[in-house]
Each structure stands twice: as structure tokens, then as C-alpha cells.
Image: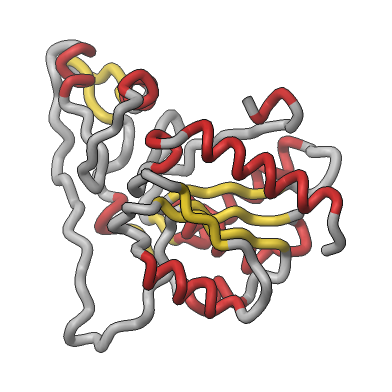
Length: 232
């Protein structure tokens, strides 16, 4: 729907989808990949970068390092949390270990799950994502992503990156998100020390693009239209 008016490029970061794998995954490397795709796309002008969840964190890094090359960045339910004491900081435990191989595509698709777990009424969209998340391997079908991502990703000082963004920025979060709850959204808003939109998508969880696709599209259209007709 956005492509009716805008030039759209969607990319698979390394370690995801149909892209290759790396020995490690610094967010700065993913940010370089994003900027390389932008350069290759040869847009008519600086593009707006939109990133959801981990992709939003990568977008924050890319925008902090390359604001002059971007018209704006839209961060979608990506958490920049208030620092906790190191002794009490929670560690992520999402490493799935070795990927399972399923005998056929239908079995693999039946095992697709959203993380964090949530219900989604738009089964056809979830099914589309699942279908393109699976590839044929020796012995059957398995997930395309590199399972080492969760242990090899090298984290960045996200508060510093967020405050270093000088291009336009907007923050989106799902009303019922457990990844970006209200206090996290407010913390990010306060870090920016300037007027930015903080949009809450009603009746949506973390995967708000799946939950409320039409609302998401409407918000993106409104932001892009406003940015195109208002001073920087």
C-alpha cells in the first residue's frame, strides 16, 4: 500500500532471511548493511528509514551515524531502556540452540511462533511471514535465520545513539506491548529533548504491524506527509 506513492525497499539483514551469515553481528555492521542498500537503491533523495523491534535498534544506530544521509527514521516498538544496576540487569535468554528440521513445509509452518508470544487475529499475514521464514535444507525444511544471532549480537550504547540522531524521528509503540511498555516509551521520548511524535497504536501488542496493519499504514502515511510539507 505504501508502494503506491513511495519507493519501498525491504531488506534481510545478514543472518536473516535470504541474506548470508557472518561470524558475529555488531549492530554497527547491520547499520552499514542498511546504508549500503540505501546507496544501491539510488533513491531520488534521502530516504526515511523504518525499523521494527531489533530492526528499530539497528535503525537507531544507522540514524545516529548517518543522519545526514536520511530524511528521517521511524522507530517501531524498539526498546531503549533506562539503565539498570549491572548486578540486577536482566539478560536475554532467547537463544534457540540448533534449529530443528521438519519433514515438510506444512509441519514447519505449523511450528511458527511470534516472540514474545501473542495472539494475532490476522492469520493470513502471520502465515505469509512464516512462509518466507522457512527454507529447504538437507532432510527437510528449517528456519532461515542464524541461531547464533542471539549469542553473537554485539550490543551498543543505545541511549547515546538515540540522542545523537539529528534527522527527523518518530516513535511508535503498541498499546499492549510488553517490549516497549509506557514507561519505556516515555523514557525514550524524554531522552530526545525535542519535539517528536510518540504514537501509541491502539489494541496492538509488540507485533503491531501484524495486529493493526491498516492503522500502522495510516500512521506512516501521516508522518511522511507531514514531514514532506513542514520545515525540518
